[in-house]
Image 1 (cartoon, rainbow, N blue to C red):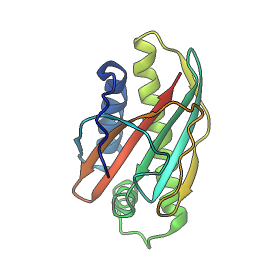
Image 2: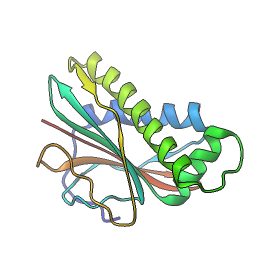
Image 3: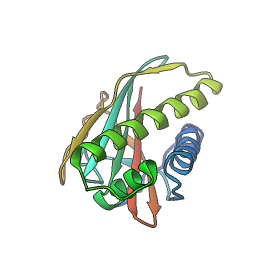
Image 4: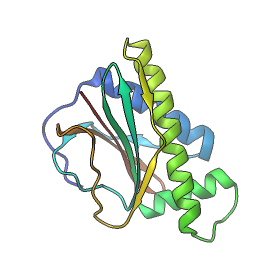
Length: 159
């Protein structure tokens, strides 16, 4: 993944970082290190399985989480507590549920900053080099994460 040099507002990124680390730890027993947030100028997903949640309210836009296949499989294993059969349906369900929880917890953090947002039901997209279409045409703010099982990225695009 190519890091882009434009910077992202640390204030808005913090609720997403906190929510992601908390949800990953509590729901899947996984820890992650956070990379430097950046503005993503392409629509190509960083992983092979992504979930996107539309948001409305004080701002409108979308939140997406994109996992490498190995990280998504580890997520499912951590959530279910056992080895999986690498079922596409299990991976889709887990990624959608985690995206929903990250979105909800991040929106609660944003509400504490004065931004009230409501979220939609997640849509899951799979496949190498798939496209994430955010509601806004502005560049997405991307936060890369690394786990022992692979990488994933949380994106938000709000206007």
